[in-house]
Length: 367
Ligand code: UD1
View (tube, rainbow, N blue to C red):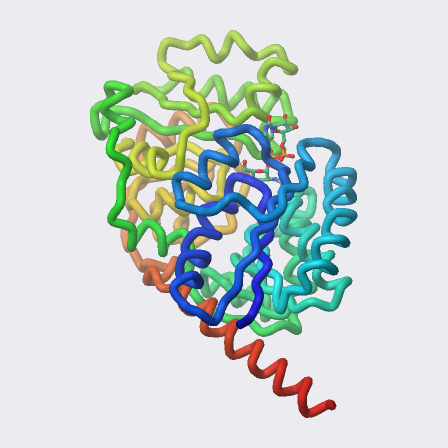
């Protein structure tokens, strides 16, 4: 048996953990421990996903919460010190690009524990973005780099990354392409929406929420669109709207504010939307998987293939451009399925098993 210690902590981790966790449970060769940093603590950003994906309660929850990034990461490192020496995992799995990801990667590397990064190699080529720094730090110390796309593989090769780079496909594509289960209640019906007659928007990246001019431009664009906009508001965004005195912009008749929703409800909202407006990497990817046009309210994206294939357009945080691009949503001219075939979790576990077998063989040779 090999012991995997999964590190999660924020909303985008649960849907990446789920396909791997369940696939590993089917085989007797894996023992799994889940460690939640508690970076996200609101029920609908964290706990709700455990039920939605049939995941067990984490074995550890650090309850770190919000705070300045260095404090957040520093607190996590102190806690990892105990957990890693107690659990002695054969390998640590980290997911995506959050502060929890980077903290977990640093901790595993400093303790000389093999490290696998799921969603390795993605780049936005701008180190002022907190997630970009997390991506660079994590990839630099990972032994196994599981890439969702060929672009991610190319990025790591260009950087001469010394780890083992594997193109496995995207784990969220595993979920979307393979899961038959869908929630029994339809959010589209519950909200009284008609397919193709509304837009779906999300906004929470620091570049937009921390910059009053950007946030104002984005909210003004949503208010100025030609159909209703369904807008689940991330707590960071709600706080920023209040702090920047922009509450009035959210009072537009056109914009329907809702609390953050679950994963399958989000998929239903995306699938039926006329277009999606977002700065979330996860939502850009999901819009592509549902072949729904996407307007990116950020200056760049790590999912560049969706732009190249015509499914997404980069508007940046500019009111007129957002309105113009959303009113004429781009229909992709090609669909290459660049996110893979829905078998990423299987490849990740098989590759990890081979890697650990080689490692233990090398250890025996040394003895
Ligand atoms: C984090 C990730 C981001 C990911 C996002 C998904 C980093 C640097 N960023 O951003 O990549 O896309 O999660 O949601 O790790 N807050 C709450 N309740 C919570 C969590 C956060 O109210 O449960 C509020 C707090 O006001 C907090 C702010 O959100 O100050 C920021 O939270 P934080 O976890 O630092 O980053 P996110 O913006 O959520």
